[in-house]
Length: 306
Image 1: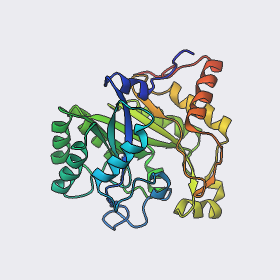
Image 2: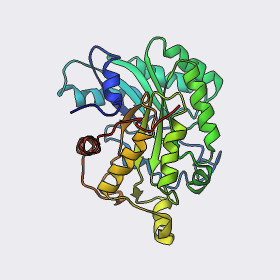
Image 3: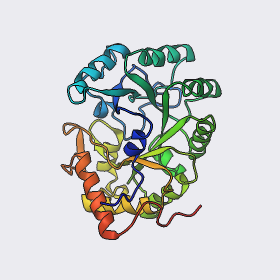
């Protein structure tokens, strides 16, 4: 099958001689949108319990979480390297001395060759980015920013606590220092129609991103958005699988072909997920995307212009 989009996992393989596996870390951070610095309650869609593996508990040290994660994956692949993925909450939201100690604890674990740090665009500064730039000379360093939408009205509605200009600035400042830069976007947020969704592709294409994670909107138990779905159902369009596949491909057609795509969907645990329930593993969904792109005879960047 012809490769019709730039797959981040394939790009990552060119960076290393051995297989590389991400291991999620919960380092006990909070979020300025929860502790009152920016707001209370967090983003309306957020329940961090939905993406933390069992070994990933803040009561354990970073080193212990990594060692348990390595033990979990080691039986599958005897020879591989690891990236410490700081995933839960806002992983740059602390004093820089503490941040350095946490990142360096991760990098001290044997066979850990880099870090991937998930954060918000309003939670980095020049001092921290300069530190990451120094680390990037020795290790693989990726900073992942939650953007979620490029529409400021949507960002207010989901209680994001920053505007799109903040995200643009953080991404440009990160990439300018030679640091690999990732972003997350959610397709199908409340009140966003197809035209708005596709405008995200065009805006993000102008940024110096290394990769993008695309997620479908999921309604998760224990979130403000789940309550809003009951109160204001007219705000929402929950895509079925085939609708979403075509939407994701429409997005890809308008997206910069030089920016890699890491994923198209996220998977919340069944006990938390309200809707949509598709019953597909990530690899099954990717297979459907690739087959549909073949049927449409299309590719990433088909309608992209600088």
